[in-house]
Amino acid sequence: MTGPTSDGMRGQPPERRRATAWAWPSDGGGRADGSYAPGLTAAVPAGQGPAMPGLAAGRLYRAVSGVDGEARPMTDAERADLHDPLAAVFFRHGRFPMSSRELLAGLDGAGAVPEQSVFLVSESGQLPPSAAPGLHRDIRYAITRAERGRIPDLLISTGANSDPDTTFLQVAAWDAQAGHFNYYMRIRPAWVWTGDSWSALAPASRGHGCFDSHVNGSVVMKELKQPWINWQSMAATIRLAPDDPLRGDPLYGQVAGAEQLETTVKALVGRWTDARLAKVTAGGTVDRPDHLLRQLFTSTTVNLTSTSVQSATVRADGDDLVLPIGFWLNGDALLDDLGLPVASAPPRVPAALYLDSLSRFGFRMQERTSGFSQPGDTFFAFLVPEAAREDNDVVHRMVLAGILPAKFAAAALMVDFPNPVYSTDRARLMAYVPTAPTPAAALADSVADAITTAARGLPQDSPEARFAGHWALADDAWPTAFAARVDAYLGRAAARTGTPEGFDDLTRLAESRRRDFRSRKLNEFELTLPVTDIPADAPRLRMNEDATVTATAPAPVTQGATS
Image 1 (tube, rainbow, N blue to C red):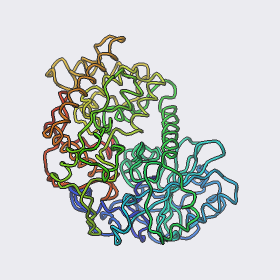
Image 2 (cartoon, rainbow, N blue to C red):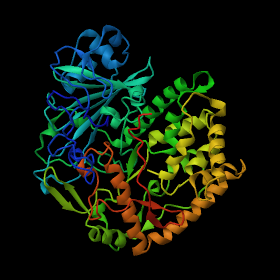
Image 3 (cartoon, rainbow, N blue to C red):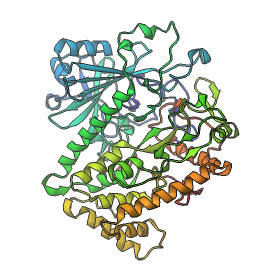
């Protein structure tokens, strides 16, 4: 849950996740230059990340990727600035637990954050063990610890079916005094502080180390909503062999459903967003407004969504599949947060067309590092990226706080709204967002004025002109006007989805978006996504408002932006 652990730390044995997707070039999820070599643990490109020479036992080190050349012991003053439960219970007292068992026992002994919840996740977890006996299953615990009746202050990520003394151990710890998360990892024989939430936003460390997944400084649960793909939940179970030793682990006996974790993660994202907004808008001025508005105009990160139907249960004469609303538009922002009065339901696809697409496009689950391959789709059908909760949360809370008018957020999101993720058109509008401190009361008007001024000299179908048209709508007219467009679009999409040609286009579009996701480090494991026979160099695609699918420009690069 707390994200990839390849912090780029050189000179130490791997105590990190087995990030199989990073082992391959861009067609399989790695870097395009091929700098990650196949293997059980992703290699670290030479010269990236802090060196970790000769860590001493009983020490807390600092190693922020992109900032620190090598790990160094934290000073007394730096340690004194850490006010989270991990620092308070352990590091201040010279205690350094080397396993999750020691860590949890130490918290119990101190009576600290006593409410514990345990969750289980694995990208291969729904595969029957008998069907893939040689597959390393990469089952992981996500453990939360909280004060009674409150949201958690500690989030612990560690291997479940690995030796607890040697598997990775990562902690995100909320510092209530500072108002941010601190990120730690154990690198034997010591612990390392890898940064805090603000490090995710700082130019030097943005997109590096753990902040290639904690892109905006918050905790991460990619598969956030029902059916909680890959998680043990009320929708699916992580499947174990009858004699799997994990069954005897006391933590396994405490595993709860991911539906509970969804609520927790949403609350934690909101807590960080509130603390962040309070700090960057203090005194009525927005510091670095571009750092906030990039979460409106771009996809700084994504979540993953799917239908709620298990792909193996689909029959040609069965019920239609309801494709996730997040595939069609940013429903969480436009419908739930901004309240557009849309009447249409998400389009459905006939089961027979879905099944035909699996064979026609060669869908399979494949892990090249192990040689595993199985025909078919992911456990839940039609997995695609959707707009991230953490992006939407920033926008929603800016609206609630009066920093942005709802109309401004809607006017931006309705630019290229059929492409809720990786939109080059919306990303283009970032050029008009100021980087200097700006009075909060003037922010929306200043950006809107800059865009509408530029629109006068541009074609009517430009992103600038579309935004200007939205912004010109009367304050009491934009919700119904936007809803009518969404309803018309979903109606056209429903008609096309029911045809072989139309659903083939949707399949190619979904794969195009999955390719965009594969190029991000948030894509840790090969078994997260299905593989198809669609060429890796196929044109990148976009959805149009008339529900046709056409080629488009390369995806904007925002996750690792350093400005």
